[in-house]
Length: 407
Image (tube, rainbow, N blue to C red; front, side):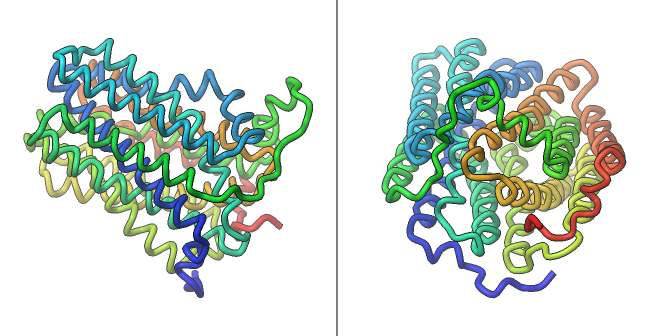
C-alpha cells in the first residue's frame, strides 16, 4: 500500500463538504439516540431481551420496505429522500423525549418510536450511499468513501460519549439533543445543489423492482463480500449488550457504557485515517478476509475480559478490523454498481447490514437472556472466525481480488 497523493481530494468539492457534514451529524445524532435508549431501557427493565428487541425493530423496516426504498433512491432526488428520512429520525427522537418527560418510557411505546427510526434509516441508507457517487469524480471516490466511513466512526465515538455524560446529567432531555442535530443534518443536505444523477426510467416491473437482488446475485465478488459481513457480524455482534457489560459485569455505569460504545469507533477511525493515507492498492480480498478473522479474535478477548481497560482496548480492535471490512466492501459495492440501479443495490445491502447489525444484536440479546452475555460474546467471536473459512471456500474469487477498481 502506498500513500495517496491528495488525502483531502473529496473535500475540494463543496457539495461533498455539505454531504459529509450531514452524514456526520446524522450518525452523531443516531448514536446519541440509540445509546441513550439502550441504557435507559435496560435501566428501567433490567432485561437483555428488550435490548435484543431494539435490533429487531430497527431491522424490519429495511426488509419490508426494500423495494420502495431502493426505487426511491433510483427514481427521486436522492438529496430530498435523505432529508425527508432525517426529518423522520428527528420526529422519532422527539417522541422518545416526550415519552420520557411524561413518565411513559415503557418498552412497547419505545419500540413504536424505534420502528419510526427504522423506517427513517431504511430510506436514508440507500439514498445516502448512492448520492456520494454523484458528488465527486471517479478518481476521488475512494478518498470520499474513506472520509465518509471515518465520519460515521467519529460519530460513533463522540455520540455515545456525549450520550453517556448527557444522560447522567440531564436524563431524558438528552433525546432533544439528538432531535436538534437531526434537523441541522436535514438542512445541510438540502443546501447541496442538485447533482447529475442517472434516473432510472425503466418500466416498473417485478424485474426492475428486484433489480438490486439480481445484480448482487450475478456479481459474485460483491455477493461474497456482503455475505462475509452478514454472517460474521451477525454471529459476532454484541452492540446492544454494552449496557449489560457496563452495569453488571464491569460495573462502570452510564458514563462507562458511553465509553464502551465509543471504543469500537475510536479503533475504527484510527484505522480509517490510516486507510485514507495508505489506501488498499493490492491483495484486497485477502486483506478483507484477514481483517474479519481478527475481528473475531478481538471479540473473543472482549468476551473474556473482566477489566474495563482491557475491554475498551479489545473493542477498539473490533472497530479497527471491522473498519477495514467496511472500507473494502463499500468501495467494491459503489464502484462496481451502475448508477441507474445503485439505489436498489444499496437497499439490498442495507438489508444485509441490518441483518448483520440489528438482527445480530437481537440474537445476542436473546441468547444472553438465556445463557449469559459472556458466553454469548465468546461463542460469537469463534463463529465469526469460522465464517471466514467458509466464505473463502464458497467464494474463491473473493480471495483473488487484487485491486478495488473493476477491471
